[in-house]
Length: 174
Ligand code: GDP
Ligand code: MG
Picture (cartoon, rainbow, N blue to C red):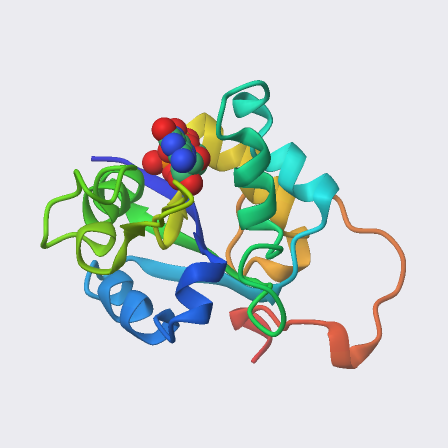
């Protein structure tokens, strides 16, 4: 057992189909700790950085259109980005998510329950979850500023003044 973090994205198909709540419910059932959360649009640059390992694959262009929200369109062109922390977080969330291919995913997994393959061949697989600790660290740094993470991970020196309303107090300051 080791404490790990995992970056989870609730993808635009889940936003489109009102599945943010059900997916969060399943994630909460893991009893992992949520330490960061943000609703965001995904720029082409962030999408390319996030999925850099898939450049050149046959589904790459479609994947870029999917994660940037072009396929599902406004007002669903957004994702919920989350960071969970806890024992064995990566494997716990990958097991909960199920197979990448929603038709192969077991029916008791999130992708098995809510995912589908569209007639255009898109894997609408509801969520992203980090696959390894290294991938998690890379992804969390890509998606979140240190100040947005409510736990002391990947410490970075802070400089400059922050306005009070945008500063998240540490537990020790409350
Ligand atoms: P994941 O870690 O389970 O999300 O899977 P990968 O890292 O291998 O792939 C990233 C994302 O690309 C997946 O979640 C899917 O959205 C998409 N993807 C992966 N493999 C395929 C494929 O064979 N066909 C299609 N259409 N999409 C795929
Ligand atoms: Mg992956």
